[in-house]
Image (cartoon, rainbow, N blue to C red; front, top):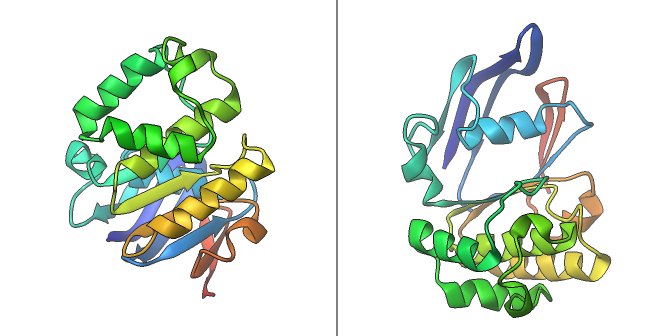
Length: 212
């Protein structure tokens, strides 16, 4: 589903990603690990089309994530490490998501309920004003409601309490069949029961890629 060849990303003289080649296939559930600055988030942002490669290529289902980003994002769910500073109210944001991505409103509410997030009392609140945990629960609910073939989570449990983490991984385990799931994480113990590949990165390179 994702094909990466000799992918390099430089910021000035700093090499953030160094000639990485790797494939991610349907049915893969991947833990992407490494120290801060290893290149994990840069790799994810290149896959998502947020960055233009310095050299090399990324293909998602045969499409270029920069040139054909709108088409690609229809089949990708993504939860970033830091929630974006969205000023829309939850009601406005839900309406926008449903219209732009074809997500069913009732499914957002259903998964929010599973994540122990009560949306209704907060509909008129700005997303920006919600607590970190509430923002993360909402973004997770949207990602699950979207029914995507590719699910990408960049430190998704960073703002969640232990019970919410358990809820998240329970829901992911129910959803991940026949999908591609990528988890950027520092907590391998959290994901070891749901992943089948462990990839370690260091200094912009992949150092190990092991089945588990």
